[in-house]
Length: 231
Ligand SMILES: NC(=O)c1ccc[n+]([C@@H]2O[C@H](COP(=O)([O-])OP(=O)(O)OC[C@H]3O[C@@H](n4cnc5c(N)ncnc54)[C@H](OP(=O)(O)O)[C@@H]3O)[C@@H](O)[C@H]2O)c1
Figure 1: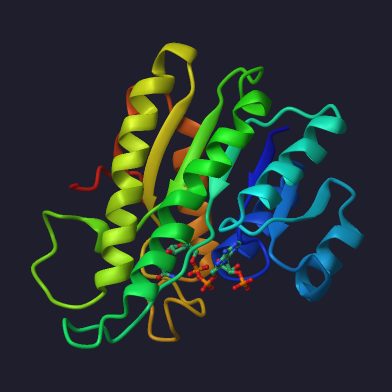
Figure 2 (figure 1 turned 180 degrees about the horizontal axis):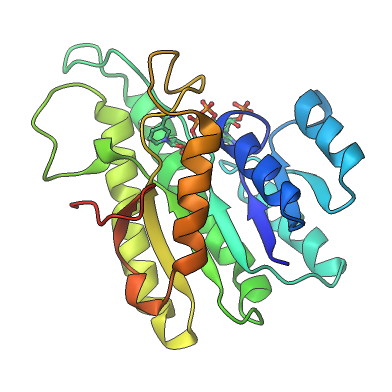
């Protein structure tokens, strides 16, 4: 049994992660901004005693600390942190780009995962193979960025990729694996109805990758299919 913290667990890929992990009997700390409004997650937590709902806004360091302190008070350890919460601003051009959107995307997509990782470190350290699994995107790839748009999203996730690589280097001596992962183009509120992948298929692929991660994978960028992604 694995013990896993998921951010942004109320819908989309986060909810699919919770469903997947709960179905295999893992203990899940499912966090979201407003658990009281997360009907699907509440229903799951009522059925599955190993699913625990906790409030966490990844843009609010105090709420991150409070959630991690709550897990610590339960005497729990974490095997994996899935930094899944994210925001995307669409239809940005150089003329329409709003600085507050760029800053908010950086806050949620880059600073948030870093603060979650920091607060969760004491919970991860006792695990036999601790993993920080940062959900990135192909739109963060500098190599593949030959098209316009997605300024805030691409830049904030590229920052997440650099934070992933730097954190992986710092935590390597402690045996903590840190990776960035592109989940594919997925049918969620963010991905839209045209996306080819279901949330379940994406999570199954990412879960297979998660299971086989070793220190050799740390500090690298992966696809949901377990292939290396260009930075
Ligand atoms: N779908 C795709 O095709 C695709 C492709 C590449 C990467 N991704 C990445 O995959 C991850 C999940 O995306 P998704 O497709 O499931 O998106 P989604 O359906 O839009 O869900 C986004 C999730 O992030 C949460 N969130 C946003 N701001 C937050 C905050 N400040 N604190 C806590 N939670 C917050 C949302 O919670 P609220 O309901 O409270 O807003 C929601 O649970 C994201 O990191 C995204 O960038 C998705």
